[in-house]
Structure formats: structure tokens, C-alpha cells
Image 1 (cartoon, rainbow, N blue to C red):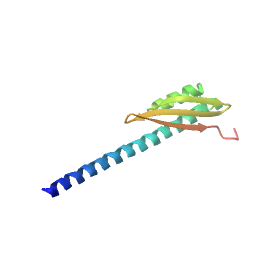
Image 2 (cartoon, rainbow, N blue to C red):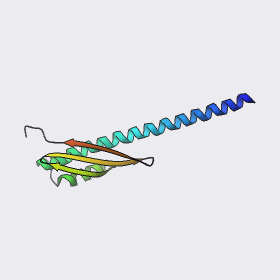
Image 3 (cartoon, helix red, strand yellow):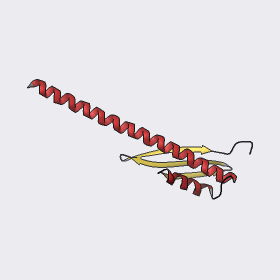
Length: 107
């Protein structure tokens, strides 16, 4: 019978470890998804600022972020350089990412 108690304890530890790894893995995926959405939103804002795309830069960033499933928490435009911050949530945690984009220097 003592072997059964050790086995149950070992299985409980293994299950806890597996659950912890899946939460950390999910948070990593959510962070990368937010970073990709921030990149795309910043590029859209920079394109709108340079005239390569129509619309108001921060409105374009909001549209692109929403299409990627995140929300814009900040959008700043200095000249043709756009900085966009986005937020998402995963398992009750807030995931944030930011990106900066500008047109190429030869434009």
C-alpha cells in the first residue's frame, strides 16, 4: 500500500508540472500573437501616415489590431513614425506588446 501512495503523489506532481507548462506555453503563444498584431498595426499606421494607404493612421492601426484579435491601448504618431501598443488577455493575465514602424528612408 505505501507504493500506491507514492505513485499517486508522483502522478499528482506530474499533472501539476504538465498543467504549469501548458499555461506558460499558452502565455508565450499569446505574447507572440500580440507582438505580431502590434507589428501589423504599426505598419498599417505608418502606411496611412505616409499616404501609401488611405485613412487616419491610428484608425487603421485599430482596424488591423481588431482583425488580429487584440485591442490598441496606445497609438502615437511623430512625423511618419508610428508607435502602437496593443493588449490581449490570456488566463486572466494582460499580455502587452508594442511596435514602431516608419516608411523606408528613401520615400
